Length: 287
Image 1 (cartoon, helix red, strand yellow):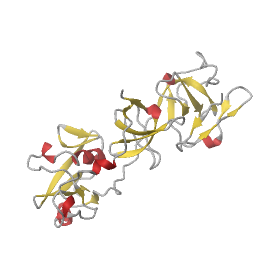
Image 2: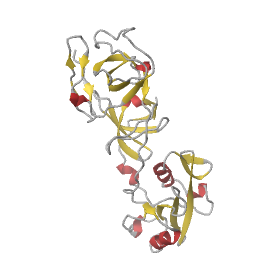
Image 3: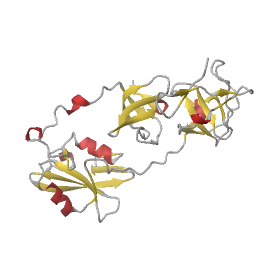
Image 4: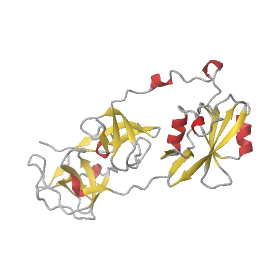
C-alpha cells in the first residue's frame, strides 16, 4: 500500500521514493514548509510501527522532524528527519512542536485600524460619521499601546487598551489573546461591560463607506453569510502561519471548523476572528 505525504498546498499529494535500504527518502518537492517537530526522546525502531505502514525512522533527542502524515489519535506518525533526510514512522509521543516564533501582526488591512494617531485627529475622523463608528489607533505618546476611539451620543470617546503579559483588555475581568479577538468580541457585546456610560457595540469601522440610514444601529442578518460550522476544536499546540492562507494558533485557542479535507491532514477554520488552513494534528475536536 503506497504511503502518501501531505504538502503545504492543501489537497496536493505525492508518494515518496523508496530506497534500497528500506527507508524512504523524501523528494525535494516535499519540503514545502511542513510543520516541524522537535524530538524529545530517542527512537531506534522498538517498538516497530505496523508492518503495513512502513519502516521505522531512527531519531535522536534534539533532531528536527518534518511532519508528513499523522493524526491526533495515531500512535505512529510519518516524518522526515532533517538531519539524515530519511523518511519513516516514529512514535507520536517522541516529538513535540518546535517553538513557535510569532510574526509581528500587521493590522493595516483592517478597516478599523488607523495606525499611529493622536486624539484630536481621531476626533476629526469621527466628527461627521454616524454614532458607533469607531477606529483603533496606535497611541503616539505610548509606544506599542493602542486605544479605541468611538463616536457615541455625537461625541468622540477614547478607551485605552491595556496590554499586559501578552493579553489585551479594556476591562480587567475580560482579557483577550489578540487585538483582533478583542475587536471581534466588542462587535457583538456592549462596551458597557467595562464602561457603564458607553452602551454601544463597535458597529461601523471608520474606513468603510458610511452606512445607509436603514443599516444604522442594526447588524441583523450579517450572520446569514457565515459558513456552516462542522465542529469545534481546541488547539493542542502553537502553530505559526507561513502565508496568508494559513491560520496561526496558540495552545488553548477555540477553533470553529469549516472544512475537513480527507487525506491531506489540513482543515479550514476560524480562530480569533481570522479564517485559514491549519494542520488537523494540532487540534483536538471537542466532542
